[in-house]
Image (cartoon, rainbow, N blue to C red; front, side, top):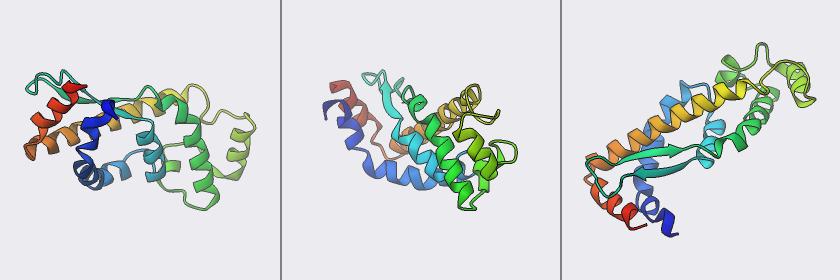
Length: 154
């Protein structure tokens, strides 16, 4: 609890940013289900909380690597349900059942190995954009200094 005391104080701001950030997620390469997975693996930290003027929220995405294979599963399930959408738009070439089966069997040049770099980079970029929006909201609501104080106490 002590490490996340400041995050516990900003639940309402997070909920508002989640809603406002939704169109940005929709225009990204990630579906809302994939974004939820990414956010589950992301921790937010405040750099230099002792100095609110220089402090900033950063997205710690070091655990995102652990969910990258699961993004493929989400896309396969969405494709199998006929929900092509964005996940397929920037994903593998043709998608569909055959590509999903090849991917599941480790065959084909779909989204294994190297393309995780693109997924990781896109996730890092999007989560940092989210962090910036969250900080902007906290500053606008005059909560930034108290949040920094709480983070500095840890």
